[in-house]
Length: 467
Ligand SMILES: *Cc1c(COP(=O)(O)O)cnc(C)c1O
Image (cartoon, rainbow, N blue to C red; front, side, top):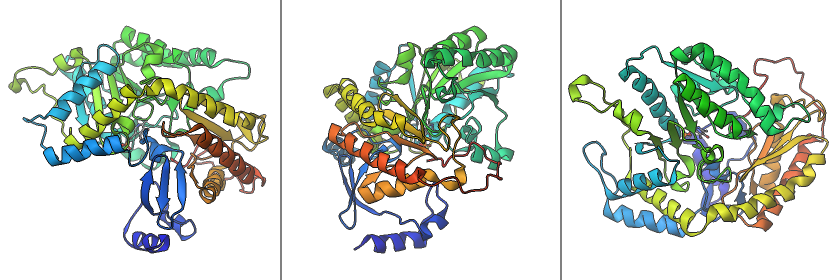
């Protein structure tokens, strides 16, 4: 059975995520038959190095035996049980371990079954906490420009991906938007730390003016992922924690993408030495095996809901697959690997290789920046280097890099004009060099021609393919 066969059957019945389906009249869909380590293999035996960890979830490779075995054991024991009124060993053990490895003060774990749902849980819990505490006016959320927190309606409301916020505007919550500390936009000669500090003034001002009506501030710590892997300094998170305490506002850390070692520490908040009021985890939580999210919070939040039933203070929120035992088993195996293999330490060498292998791109005439935080590295392609003028989004330059990478055997799917590596941690140094080579070639090809689109359509000036 060939790729063509599966592609045709697929296109007859499926509607793919994040895709203009008409693109597939031209772009081949790639059916994958099997995976092994960093490799994905199609039905004709062609292999692709998974440089983006299959949408940022896979940390220890495909068909990882240690995770697979744990799931197989669990599937013979107990595949699922509802978590209301019932419990099971994997969910207890996983909750204990998450409390242990996250910053002090996070003592309660609430499960959801995907990242967006985890965000909904955190938003609702924060709002409900203030309601239970006699402060019903605190019902708005503060978010950063260029942020992304998922695609359900409330999660979309606290995000800032132009296309979504515009298209679905009529459905969204009324949030307060503050300029992001995004260090790509810092003035020349200014350090990440200085820029992040300066940008905090806008947050301080918003909180000073609105804290009486604000439930929480939500951020993607250190890396704004879907917004183009834009990065900032941990000092911003430290200042934000202090301000949230001063103004009586919750701090929600969306570490769905950055948790589990991506930024160089197990969790991004460690780099700021702070504890958020809500920590939302998903994606790599199960090693990329099964959908699951965990929302960690404090005793103080938990206590505001703990009362006689008739007071109606309980958090009556549920997702059907909450705490699924198979997903818990995958997560426990994933945590074992982190612990037993000294992964965070070993990643330092890989991160250094990612930097050295791409260092030459800084001099490329159409690369404005090569930036990195831990195991995430991004290359920003631009039309004009000196002025950091972006390519018109309609030209889809990143797509050209993607198509080139496929011919070379790499899954390198850019975000608009941002080419990035977010590889599984089982990648080798030689494989990193290969990715850098493929990316360089792709960027050369994609930037060879000058701008051809009449830039009349400014409806979405900051629009990027969401990934
Ligand atoms: C992926 C992502 C989400 C949404 O998670 P889903 O499982 O896709 O719903 C939310 N926030 C961040 C930062 C993400 O990267």
